Image 1 (cartoon, rainbow, N blue to C red):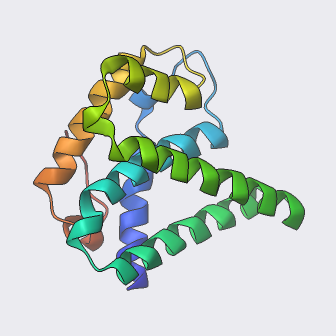
Image 2: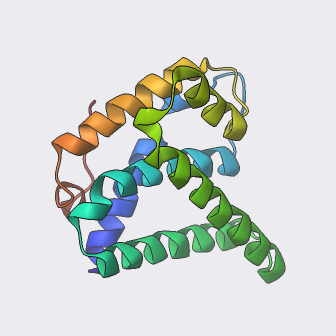
Length: 156
């Protein structure tokens, strides 16, 4: 089961590394990448949560946040800082999940505000709206198991 989760995690990381998601004039930071990762993960959860076992999905969620914690520790943060950052990222994740759940009901302005609230970017927010709309379609066209086998070359 861990291998399956690792493949999902690595697929989400690969999506997050898409250079088009970052503004060329700004240096992308760990925090920026993590926020984009959380967007990908929130939409992933939105699409597949009802099609899969709740315990399995909770295990996936726990696995992903354990990987995030390990990444924060690798950067060199101490225990107190890691705990604070993890609390912030978990709260951010819940906020992003709330917006992702309502995605189809949000108008363009609310979607723009959604990205503006989290990303300090000069990119037009319509870029992110278009990107994540295409990402949602991509997720609906592929099964959960599609992401569990290997790291995929994503095209959408």
